[in-house]
Image 1 (cartoon, rainbow, N blue to C red):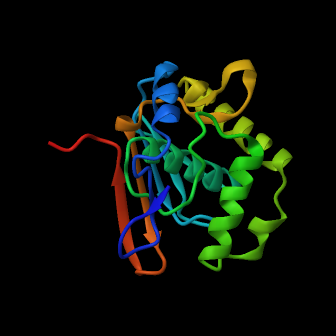
Image 2: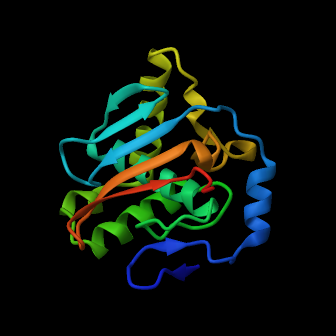
Length: 180
């Protein structure tokens, strides 16, 4: 993992190529277009969109989705604001550690630090139920082999993240779409 020059975002940087290949060999269960926008660990203005259906997220749901989107986009070689492991699937503990590290790095509110792995699991369940309730594929959050770990269930090219870079005080958009 390498830091991008002149900022605090993270990129694949060519490290973990075998993990990247293993990750891509496991098919994605959906082709859904996914967009997440907002500020992690805040209480308002957080939205998750799947194929045009907009869902309002609470802070933990948003934080989990933020980690999973950063995870997906890192595998696509994009610069992301959060250090996320390059495992093909992230455990609840991995997700929690990424949230805690990010919350500490940008001095976010303390309530992020009180979450547990069980809270992460419940958040994933509630996100899947919201999506399913609208007739969409709940496997937008995919499970790993033997039901271990999580990742977004769509190809990184279908993922877009819009967030407030609090250090630069500007809105940043990261898309998994190929350039050119």
